[in-house]
Image (cartoon, rainbow, N blue to C red; front, top):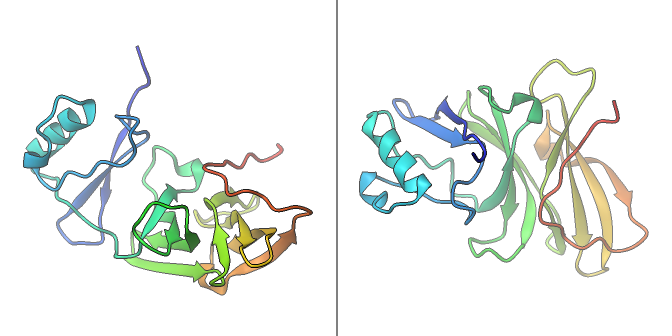
Length: 191
């Protein structure tokens, strides 16, 4: 009964450190962080999984960077497979108050990142990866998010080339009305 949990082992940017990623939250309460087996003392499914993973001797805490962010995404075609790139909506601070101001692309093979920050008066939502139908590489596609300028209350759909995130939007589509910041979104190709 219930949904299967896929645990994927991934190399980290830190030599000798391995990451484990899940395809879903185990508690329904969002992110949980276990720095050692001592943090996994409870009876929850995530505590039990953390204890099992630490017991392998291959698990260590690893932080990608110091940029606050949320809503991590990948090219959905890579779900359940080793992926090179990940995307995170960046925030102005560590408080969870929907003050997202950009997007960061992480290259897990190179241990590097490439980001774009919107104007100080703009707030963005979750960035969705839309694959290029003719693309070959994992990052052949676009990152899309609604962006609202708080000063003018105007919203746009910002479209960023995932191959050059720091260049910023390659297109900004003006919406007829302000689009409230959403929580999650998905992209489905028409084919």
